[in-house]
Length: 356
Image (cartoon, rainbow, N blue to C red; front, side, top):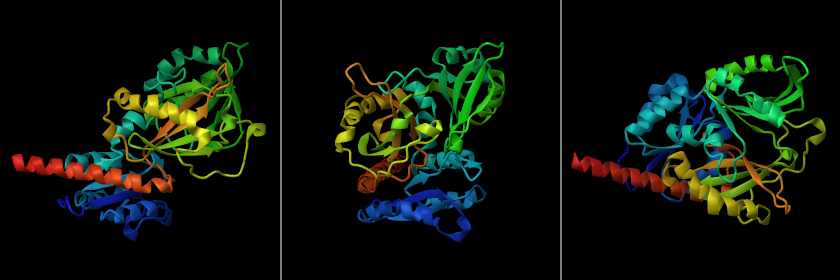
C-alpha cells in the first residue's frame, strides 16, 4: 500500500468492465465533481473498476492505495456484493481506509436500521422477522394495520418491497392485495395470505430477514432525501416516487434538483435531524461519528400531521452502498472528509510501524 503522506492516493471504485481500463461513462460523469475536488487538495485519484472475475487484480491495485470510496449497489447486473465485501474487509485489515466499510453497511445500510432506530423521532411501528416461521406467527399485525409495507433486508430499486393490504377476512385463509415496488406502477395482484407468505420465504435466503412498517398514507406527497457527510447535513432533494401508489395518486411534477440545507421548506426536518436524530444515531448503531460514511443519504416520507398541523417524518431507508447522484456543491466537503480520514489512517499506521 502507499505510504505517502504528502500525496495520498485514493481510489473511486465502481462495478464495470475492468478489461477496458476505465470506468463507465456514467460513473465518470457522476464522480467528476469529486475528482475535481480531490485534485484541488493534491490527492491522486485512481478509478478502480471492479468485477468478481478480476478480484486478484483489483486487490493488487487497492493495496497500492491509501483509501477507497465505493459505489456498488447490493444487487447490480445480477451480481451481489458478497465477493466485493470480503475483499474490502481484507484490504481494510491491511491498513487501507474504506468507505463505506461493509461492517458499517451492515449497521446502517440495510433495512434493519428501520428497526434498530425505531425509537428515534423518525421511527414508526416497525417489526423485524428473522425467519419465515416468525413472520407467519406474527402476521396478526396485518389485521391491526390493514396495510403494511414489507421490505427485504437488502435490495435495490424496490426489489423485495411490497405493499400488502388485507382485503377479505371472511374465509379461513385471508385474502390480500399486493403491489411490488419494483414495477414502479400501480399493478396489483390478489392472493391468499398463505400464498404471499410462501412467496416471501425466498427473501430470507437472500437478505436474512424482513421488516415491515405501516403504509404511510401521505406517500403521494413525495419523499425527502437528506444527504450527509459523516454527521453533517449537506443537502436535500424532494422526490416523487411512483411505486406503491394507485394510478390516480401518481404525481409527476417538474423534477427538482439538489437543494441547499438552508432551503426554507426543509427547516423543520433539518432541526430534528441536527438537534436530535443524527446526534443520537451513532450510539444506537454502535458506531463512532467518524465511522459514518463520507457520503450517505436518508429517505423520509411524510407521516401524519400533528394536532396543530405540523408535518411529521418517517424514515423509509438509509442508502450507504452507492450514493449517486449526490449534491455537487458537497463534493468539496466529501473530498475533505475522505482526505482527513485517510491522513488519520496513514498516521496511525506509521505509529504502529514505529512501535513494532
